[in-house]
Image (cartoon, rainbow, N blue to C red; front, side):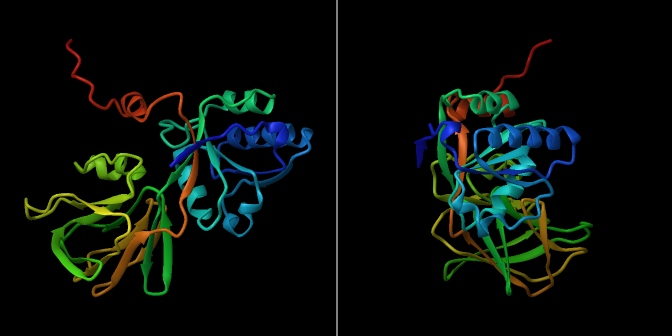
Length: 286
């Protein structure tokens, strides 16, 4: 689901500027945006450390501008679960897959230029529950070991039906937008961004028949870890973690709200795959 975003900066009333990027250039850019917005009469809330519980109040704002890179966008998205506010990412990092906008794009927008090709897209997120603790993920939920010294035995059920048992180094459960991250490096498929689904991909499975599987987005996946490796943990976007012990069961399902991603639709998704990930490129002859 997507819809055009054409709200001029002069019509904005309240904006959140978020960053977890510790480069001085990121903080300087946030301050520059804050001054430009305030000169337009916009109320600005600034979070430079990535610690504010944005979901508690973000729905009362018109826009979130996340300054840093893809990692900053992941952190911002998790802190916005429960809120409905469009978020755009300004890329100061390397890849810029989620943070699609260059700083110059925002400078032009704040100077009065009408957004061209900006689309507000609903991105499915994941919720993972372990006992009484909950984490959210925009890209993926993964099980990993600090030191890989034994295979993990993981029983998996989908809804109320037993699906399979994995003997593997770990497991990755990815959203469509996260299917191009950890999942892709493991040989998992790229999911179309319009799908309501997630893909489950084992890490170095013992059985060759344990292939990645795509599950409908309405399902609940229950995983029980039969044995514990060294420093075993459940990770959300490889940024937040919960410790796992033998016998623990965790559940993964769609988060209660989507992430409203403000993308630049002047390029198609396939163009982004080709330019950012070199998807489908033929080997270059010397």
